[in-house]
Image (cartoon, rainbow, N blue to C red; front, side, top):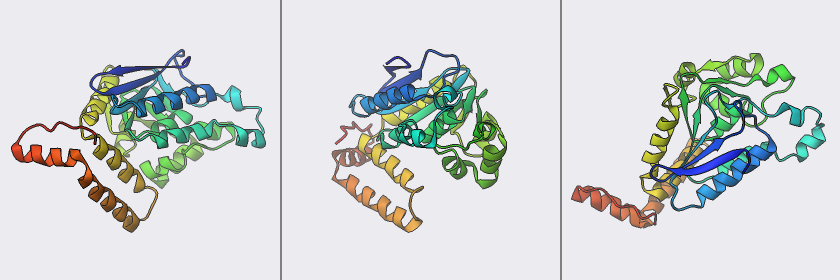
Length: 255
């Protein structure tokens, strides 16, 4: 790994950092390394949740324009760049973005691809692609609209409106906003808390919430109910309910 670093931190938390630049930019190499690191943590039984972060100055200041400026439509279709964003969707464990400074273009799309976002007070979110004569291509028109609503998304996509961290919180784009010296610790704390829960229930809970954005309410309710019943076949369900009745802390086995 040249453009990211990985480590296991408190509890069962896997931490992935972008490195090498004060203002990380997203290119095929970085996203490929990120996809590999996420997959490795997802397969590691000692990891229960994952945090992805950049620098204090920028989570990611957008895509690498030099890499794509001379590409044709056909060449862009062959590139794996945008497809790599979809790799995050295949991760079964919760992924939390810890963001600060610039969270722009592909950086905002990457953060929104994660399950939760913890932001520093300095974070500013935007989709400035219109300034380059293009539009967002990795979820910026879709996930953003679902998060902040049509009116604000239109202004961000069509007129490069930036959201402050407080605005992003008010519009529901992020989970919480904390001082810059605490945002990474806050994200790790959140990941550690989630990682201490019943692993299978966490995985299926993530699936169920994501399903709500991809189906009708009636279909989503049926999907949720099936997962609910399925969990009664796990040892963790028996342990969780027994521990509750015995007024003790459950010991999760992940099976």
